View 1: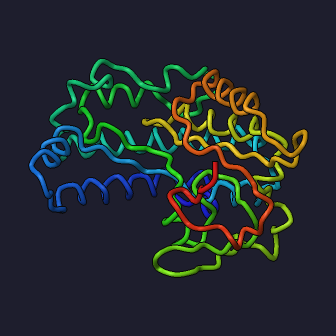
View 2: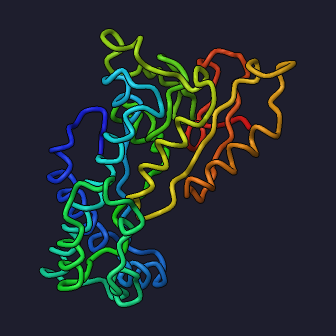
View 3: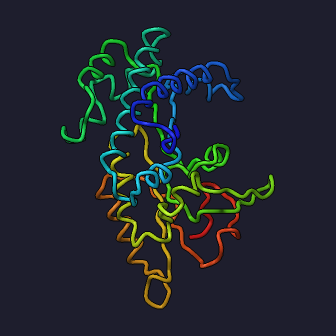
Amino acid sequence: LNWGKMELVDVKKYMALAVRLLDNLLSYQDYIVPAAKRFTDQFRALGIGAIGYAHFLAKKDFRYGQGLKETRELAEHMQYYGLLESTRLASERGRCEGFDRLKYAKGWLKADDTPAEDKTLDWEYLRGEIQAHGLRNSTVMAFMPSETSSQISNETNGIEPIRDLVTVKKSKSGVMKQVVPDIRSIGHQYQTAWEMIDNLGYLNAVAEINKFCCQAISVNTYYDPSRFSQGRLPVQQVLKDTIKAHKLGLTTMYYHNTHDGQSEEQTDDCAGGACKI
């Protein structure tokens, strides 16, 4: 879902559409090996994520670590309405074969670990619907870097900070210049990864999303060595951020990115748009 170009009230409609579209795709597509089809039939896992989070923050003139309530509500609505649509599909087409092996079958919801004041929707109603109908899909959400989706949509990468207002990305397909959305009106409100004093704001934002995400989030960190003594990134800083992520309940670290001082126009493309460690 494109968080940069939608409102909270839109999430219900778009999650319902995305769940049905992807569930249809699981049934429609061909499977090269029988094991892949068996696993899909058992769990019918979906991974609906988001792009445009940096755009969303810029539109509100927020830095990373600000707007945590709004961020949390977007994630909450995605999981709630994704699971709710999956229960409706289960009542129409049948639950996934492995439903009884899921924690959901025992009445568990990830939202149970979230304080009541951080929830805005009727999770007890959803629990009852799951108990009554089961789920068609074992998971509905997954927040990934979304490099390709972001390029196609001309949006900011997943939930990641931008590296510059204009980047040139190189791949086997050629070279593509990408400009952040609404650069003329709110370009000055974007916060680049290298402008962040530390990773705390980013990690806190991801932690809020993680409260309502079915699967582990690919967590990145960003460092500008010029901010440190002698222009060198201390390993203690990386360890500090890793421990902080663990304390916030995050479980998967992805890339530790460093800024080499060169123009972003010299950045080669790769998975997640992160190439340097």
